[in-house]
Image 1 (tube, rainbow, N blue to C red):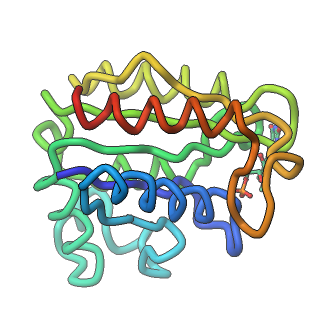
Image 2 (cartoon, rainbow, N blue to C red):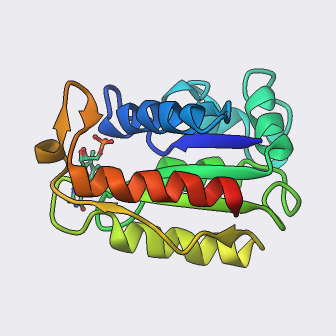
Length: 174
Ligand SMILES: Cc1cc2nc3c(=O)[nH]c(=O)nc-3n(C[C@H](O)[C@H](O)[C@H](O)COP(=O)(O)O)c2cc1C
């Protein structure tokens, strides 16, 4: 089972649009991925789902369980301040350690307003996932200057789409 994580809680994010497009692409390949949208985390998440309160938030627990049950993930990673969003790290900190991600597999795709396409964001995240024992697919598309690559809420850039397509097939076979 593949789960897509939309890696920001920013309202109307491009990340969410890309998560929905990625879901469609995986569906075209016969998968039925769910999306975890960090915008839908409980509003009091940082006070009620971490540390001594781990596992006690009834609103967050189904999301935590879905992360535990999933065998593979696709992380959609926007570039914020040269890295990935803090909310994504906080989300990871709220998962059951060490078994949620250990031995599992993931792919990631970066996007940014500027010219880096989340390259450092994905590098930082890869370090964390490898530390946690998760295998990261080597192909990591970098969607630079994202607003120029989108039309009607979807990526239309031909070369980006080719990378996404190859990556989608690869995570299924990974
Ligand atoms: C807090 C914050 C920090 C950001 N930092 C960067 C950055 O370091 N480099 C960059 O190219 N774009 C940066 N951006 C722009 C995002 O990459 C851009 O909004 C892109 O659409 C992906 O983010 P989104 O999913 O929130 O839309 C930043 C955006 C926010 C909200």
